[in-house]
Amino acid sequence: MTTIKRVKTKQELKQFVQFYYDLYHDNEFAVPYLYSDEMATLQRDKNPSFECCEAEYFLALKGNKIVGRAAAIINHRANERWNRQAVRFGWFDFIDDIEVSTALLKAVEDWGREKGMTEIVGPMGFIDTDREGLLVDGFDQLSTMYVNYNYPYYAQHLERLGFVKDNDYLEYKVKVPEVVPDKFAKTTQLVQKRYGLSVHKFTRHELIDEGFGREVFHLLNATYKDLYGFSELSQKQIDKLVNDYIKIADLNLVTAVMDGEKMVGFGITFPSFSRALQKTRDGRFLPFGWWHLLKILKWHKTNTVDLLLIGVLPEYRSKGANALIFDDLIRQFQRYGFEWAITGPQMETNGGVLSQWQYLESTPYRRHRCYKKGLIISNTNYSLKSWK
Image (cartoon, rainbow, N blue to C red; front, side, top):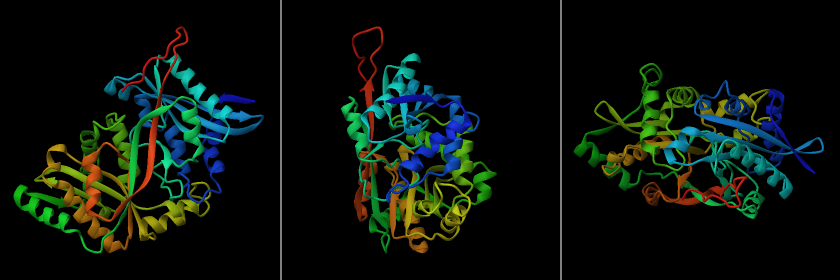
């Protein structure tokens, strides 16, 4: 029999985080997430997203053994933005037992109903920069620290329980070319001459002390505002992202496009930490995890780069600002000896973004899916329709 336990103590939260590492310990494609990041994200006093979110965490047990976990999250800012009353499920992992997955999702649904929610969606995190979507294709490809990895049976359970597709994300594996494609090189020259746009490589002082790091994420707010489930980042959330990413980034792998003094586009990339994380002890820095990660961060001991975040203001996309980002980053990738680039998740309906890969040797790599289901209100005999 499966029992559900609500996480109340820090020790129980540690068990909640640890379950993923135990479930995927021997999987050659899963990548451990950084343990410290997981703990910080899930704690109310360390994650600024709790200024617009509330959450509860649940563990599933059979006897005294933990067999599953799930987070229930309500992002009030996103619900207001998209006119939804949705409870999100995330950090959703479980053994291949329908009783376990049913009990976990019921706990999330019941909590959502108590809060007045009319639908359940996920997997999703607190905000758009958290991991989103269930892996539904690409199980035999090495994952990254930025996306969910899960076993194929997860989707089978969700669909058996009445969940349907809400949104799909695609990721591409891109061969780093030996020569910058003419499309990017010629477009770069054209837009520099016609529109006066330019590539800028930031110094750490500019990003941290002069506020350009914050400006990157203000720009992200503007460029991502119409994407699925997005909620505008607050200043506290931006400060945390600057601290988590900008402070440690290799600035050769960060590119901005400027129109005079105005930033109109950006690209943030990191060398892949996937193999290094697999060598750590469950995503922990100690005893020797720090050394494997340092080799990637400082000396780029990997043949793969992750395209983490790319954004261009809508009015500059038609002017070819994207080409300046790719032209510059490809040259940096060549210099570092990267052979492959892995894109971040992109909505399958975002034709403008997906079309840019046609100019490079690329192939679809993974597909993630967000699911939804209407919640039955306890004092009625019908199910409210999910948002379409």
